[in-house]
Length: 425
Image (tube, rainbow, N blue to C red; front, side, top):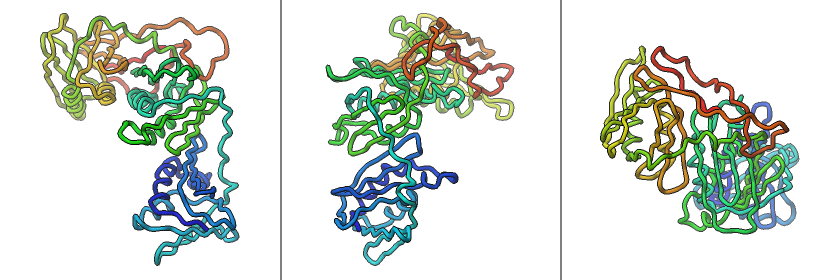
């Protein structure tokens, strides 16, 4: 038997339960594994690619241990329904495959699955181990994750490239936009190098679990990262996340980043973002940015089924050369929403080339491919790199690869609008 505070168990389940998924073929994946330890319990959940484990203090009966699994959603909902200050008593009847839960006048009996049916936690043999500040890792992932590809035929792009070489670099791209953040780290001569690709689910779980700010003690705790041959493990705040790495060679993203000549065109980020969100209500997947004199005009049209026109005008510093260029407004919205600066700098060379977005507060950038409309903005392929060297690709890195195939996510272009091109690595 074990006794545990409702608040402690609820906190542990909140960490672990989201990784479990509704699986009909493998019911065990809907469960969390609970195991007694010396001063409490461990709670583990998995989707087979990711394992999350945390612990909670509890009073454990010394006469016998406890190791079993319970349905994660049912247990979490039940625990959360009890009073905040409740103490829960768990009694496991192994012969009946049931767990009895008592508190006050309440008594519940839940079915269990055997602990040995639960997928074992992978044993990671680290080739590199290092520590990173939580806020820095969180912000680098959060500022770039929006650009990850959702096309599963492009496996290597279904995540974020993670590189550690004196500074932390995180990259994401779907072939139409590219987001990069180079974060400076506190000096540490013992910090090892790493080049890996984190799966999109791993990034989502890190963003859910990491502390973004530095206002509490837990966010001040560093993240210990252990990199193995096919897996990576993150430990922080009493949580262990073990995830499978994406295998393959990440494209040489640096070669498709346009050169930033001068300071670019400064635009108020909040006003620009608000205008784009309104424009996007009408826009049929395309909007035109017209930089002229001291104004930025954003305009768009609806389609035949939902006709309409939209126009927004923003004040900007005087531009040297007028230019009109078109983009998918959703790509611009996601890029601007990823940062918090008051101002964003837009670097444009011509209507046929991608745009470069930068901010002053940190080494973050986003490249967005342009679109073609009947109003004069055009498209062109981005620079094509040299062919990759022969040989077996590694798991991570920024080596060249052949030109990427069509994403498969584009809709048929209308007569006056072509689908946005891709960044061809």
